[in-house]
Image (cartoon, rainbow, N blue to C red; front, side, top):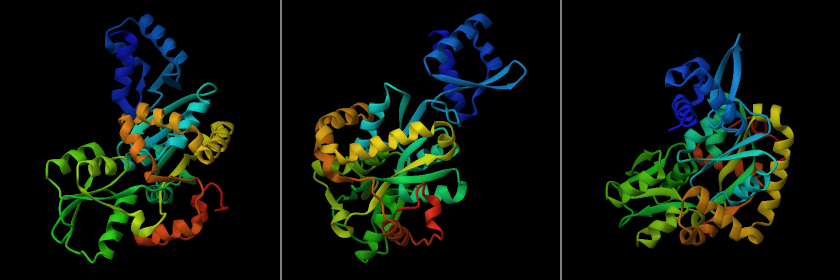
Length: 334
């Protein structure tokens, strides 16, 4: 381990609180070695520091800093195949800007990271972004991202008394409850998971009877012979994830944001032309096997267009009524 490695490891453990530079002297290196390592890490765009007093600095690993960094974009995504257009856009901008793709397993953790500012742009469930936009007022919704692409996987018959897992305050929960209502099933126990990988493992071990989840996990479990109910077969094209932005990021990097969004729309429109590149990026960043990505690629409808009617219908499904809905969106023309 080098001084740089130890500094990065320590800063990562401190999360978005960061650490005073003076704390790093306890790592066992000389002050000059620490200073040289910090200078090198800054040049590599791996850390950021702020003055907090006379000759005193607080330092963060750049992926945890709770504020925007000039000419830097931290794009947060969930582990899914819903974001080929976002990954293509991040790839297109990486020569000009410091672009970092951060993959989360939990929709709540990702949207919270967006709200506190350690993620600048994020694709996460629309319902989750609306709730955070209402509560914290630090984010706004930019556009749609993916539609449909989720469903229910069951071991055996879907009937009363079963236990089904879902992610909390998410499209998965909304669609599951609506689906169960339509089927007239009232005695279903719903439990929650934070990590889709552990949820799938729990399902395969027989600890739960069903799983409300997104692609490519639907295709993965369908391969294994389980019953799959695609919500789109029952409810059509419903919004899943949206693209959200932290407002502080706009104050610092408005030109970067505008460039990202224009390319994002263009990549959405021309996704089929760049499908091979998108598949490779999803394999690289999400860790899914290539065959599974190809198999599940069409599970989502990729679209940045999002209408007020679609949003209101989604809120109705969740049992919510939001007044002045337009104020939650970056553009009120939706």
